[in-house]
Structure formats: C-alpha cells, structure tokens
Image (cartoon, rainbow, N blue to C red; front, side, top):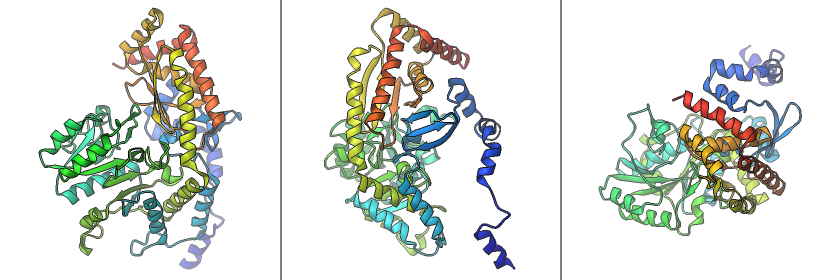
Length: 473
C-alpha cells in the first residue's frame, strides 16, 4: 500500500500542489506578505523610493510588468544572472536532470555530475586541482578561510578595507564595511589593510601568524580594481612568508570582467584558493565553489577519519551541478567572455565621453561588464549648493537620485554601489548587447541633463531624500 501511494505521488496524483493557481490567487499580496513575515524593512524601502514594481515575466536582460512595459536589467540580481534570466540551455538542463530521477544526495556514493563540473571549472584554472561545492558565495569564502587556516596551521586572515566577502560570521570577519559588522561581535581577529598597500601587507606578515590574504581583484563596493602589479607582488610576499592568496571571484568570476577570472588580467597571478558562485548557478539553483591546490585539500582531508570534516548537506546536488555544467557550456560555445569584454569596453567608452560634459560626473572605471560611475562635487555655485545640501544630510543621496529616475522614467534597474557612496555600479547580465548600451547611455544622459538643469522633479526628490535622512538620525 505504501509503495502504491508513493508511486502515485511521484507521477503527479490528483491531490497535488498547483503553483500556478497559488500565484494567481495570492501573488498580488507579495509586498504585504514580505512586510508581515520576512524582512519588514525591504517593502518599506521599496515603497519609499518607488521601486515597488510588479514584474511578471523576465527573459535575458529584460523584465516585463503587467502592462507589457519592458525594463532593462543592469543589476543581474547582484551578479547572479550572468547569462540573463531563463537561458534555454540552462532551463533544458534542469528539466533533463529532474526527469532523470537520479539517486541524488545519498551521501554514500559518488555521483558523476560533481566530478564533471569540477573538471570543467578546473579547465579554466589550470594551476588548481580540486573543488569543494557548497551553496553560496559566503559559503565558498568560509571554506577558503577554514582550509587556509588548517593548511597553514595559522589563525589570522588579512583582508582589505571596504571588501565584501559575505555575511556569515567567518566571512563577516573579513568584511571591510563596518555597517555590516556592527552589532555582530565578537568576530574572528582578522586584520584589514587598504587595497594596493603592499607595505601594510608585509608588516602584517612579519608576525608569522597570517594564514592568508583574501582579496577581490575588483572590489564590488565602489568598483575599485587592485592596482597593476599588486596581486602578483602580494602573491610573492605571501608565499615568501608561508601564507596563501585567496581570490574572491564570487562576483567578478565567470566572465564578468572580460576574462574568465578577474585575477587573470594580471600575468603570473595564481591564487592558492579561488571562490566562485553567483553566475555559476545560471540564476536557478544556489551554488558555490572553492577551488584549490591539491596539497591544501589533502591536508584538510588527511585521513578517512576526516572525510566529512568539511561538508555541506546540499553541496554537489544534481540540480546545481547540472546548472553549472550548462552555464559553462553556454559560455564556451557562445563566446560569453569575449562578448562581455567587447560590450563592456563599448559601454565604458560611451560613458567616459560624457565626463567632460557633466561637472557632477567624476569618473568611469571598471573592467568588462563591471563598471562604476562615480559622481563628485560640482564647480558651479548653484549645483554646488544643492550637492552640499545632499552631502550634509547623507553621503550617497545624489547617486540614489540618479538610480530612481533611471527606473521610474526610463525603466532601467541599477544600484548604488554601497552605503555612503556616490557611485552607481553596473553589473548587467553578460548577454546585454549594443542596443542595450544605447538605451542605457540615452537614459543616463537624460538624467544627467535633468540634474544639471538645476531644478525639476529630480531635485524635488532629492529634498525628500534629505528629509528622510535627517529624520532617521
């Protein structure tokens, strides 16, 4: 009887779950449900800045609302949607792996998909030999921190000011932004230096207790790249002192910067551990991976007694592995990395042409399709007084003033690059094309024209932001 019931359930019996019906019935409650049961500040924030949209469909680099209006995605789910949304190859792979009804996660066998995905990843990282699969970027970083500490027998990690490596306790200990760390102490006793400061790194290494230096080749906060030659010099310093180099490629990896990894822009850099996640998921199934040298893994897993000393309950699950394999296949067959480099160069060059035209526009920086747009203090008296008003209330309000009309008037989704920063970060899906570049540049130019006009709705919104910022002090 039990077997018959199980069989009926497996083939979709009559008493089933209808997701479409549930969404049709309750989908309109999305913001109320979040306010009642999840992070109540999220819907409040979205309502305040007018981002409380209702998107009903997505494909590639675009969303659509219920009225059929399309929105250009220049955020990619914080980098998760490397191939855009619902790539047909990734969708098919997930349908195929579900239809295969694999004996997944038995815990006491070796399924082929994890080995095949590790093989494909390592082909892009020829100096590394082994992979651990977890479920997220922060978990990939946690793995690297644990492995580095165990392999070296040391305790301290050096990281960079303004770094972001995740929000679980270990990765939070190497998070360079106090706003994320405040209230969660005690954390691990790790040490921050400025990105590019070799002298500071060397001073920390002299104590002999540093296990590793973890670094984003391009910091997500502010979009600051490591100075030329820094990663190679840091690697040599670390190895001279018996410490390891950890490259956090969670956001920058898998083609984002115009190479497979961002560290590959600098010749001779071969990190001991590399963390990837986000785009490897295809936007469907959470996955993280920590790639490392053979000797590090063999030290951690030194005996059969230690076979499960570091593991993840859902790590290496078939759906995540299938998604990852499909993503790498698409990237290789469709030339995604080269496309990201070409379109990124085009977008950056078009934006740099605007810098002399607008006094509020300070700098365009980044690599590939990871671009930072920084705003700065204007020279003319009228604009300077308005800028000063915003800065006195809260740094970062002008960038927010740009992000809002990009969405409200031009249906383009972007983000401010970090708290108290006058920087917008563009990390669109790697499938954006020249038409998308044209659309963004036209919209950004219109917003800049409005901002430099000295009045109108944009500055009225700025006054609203000032009042809110002052009220929250």
